[in-house]
Image (cartoon, rainbow, N blue to C red):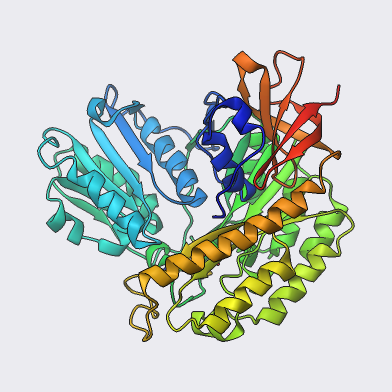
Length: 490
Ligand code: SAM
Ligand code: SF4
């Protein structure tokens, strides 16, 4: 991530929300920093009856690592637990059941989880400690070897079995696992806890059928499974009835969606249908795979005002040679063609991307192509990563590893180039007005923050005393690389 100074945050006396700005550019939830986050909304239910409170009086603590898919999986896991009578607590020390929903996309993420598990070596007595998610799937029963105080290991492809696994632990089971990858169903819950008052996630596709040579996801999340379009529409309607106006459709490759029901809808058809749900004002989607990104998605954004002006389209590298080694299934030219479609849209659409530097064998010339791609694509923000070798991936044993210092150097050069692009582009937006959905405030300074349809963060002043959750017009008065300062246009 190109990390930079942010306008408006300085005046808030905090950098938390400023770092959040670029995260928010692809919709990841930020630390609130100087802006107060909104309170929890609670839960939304499905159509089914709630399981009786089998564990009334028991409590759980759930910590989430990683991406938005994990954030939303945790909302569903929390719903499953609440349906069984568990109550959420704020600290692991107070909890009967301590769960970590984990990430293993890069080595550092996995190390962090093991460090957290280590904390329980002498303290786990009487508690159930569980590991969920990607690291659970990747390490499997090895986790019991490394941390014998853990009793539950369950990968995301087996979350449907969670109620059964928890019931076995409740009736005295010592160790339980859910590690099957062959499930052909998605994870539906009777109750989903909603941790964000304004933006509700809906997973429309789970797993991944691509095989990018650096990536653990196909191994940890299993094969691609799409949800039936009527189930997605029904969830969108329930969310609108519960007062949500913004929905984010989720999937590792969200635009590879294929309706398994007889309707057989493509992604773009589902996108239009969700945007048509009465009460929904904004629909986002992430992450799009370039291979499945077709012009009809841009046409839909142009035609349907509820579809947000933002596409997250990870490129990974600007070099066709490296893309081939990564098994990304597109060339630099094909990718740039898709960027050209988006840039040709009738309304300006912001574009963000993920980039990996230091992939095995990446030469200076390859890296220079990634830098020149930044110039060509003119991204609004990027998430940048040093390549991290991962188990069960085909790149793991590739020759010509790039030394760690060189990866760091390339990362710094990349971020510097992107920062300059963002500064120049954002300056041009000073004076423009945007509709902002207000999602944070600093009451002492009557300062507010929120996002535009293109997911830019604007911190602004207003004479009004309560704007949380409102859509307001804000004029940009100053620009930083990752966020903006503005004034409420009243
Ligand atoms: N499905 C998305 C796509 O195809 O673009 C990506 C999902 S992945 C959870 C998020 C990002 O993590 C990827 O886009 C990639 O940039 C990065 N990533 C994945 N594996 C990595 C690795 N081994 N080392 C460094 N970054 C990695
Ligand atoms: Fe990983 Fe590639 Fe699948 Fe994205 S498309 S989740 S990077 S394997």
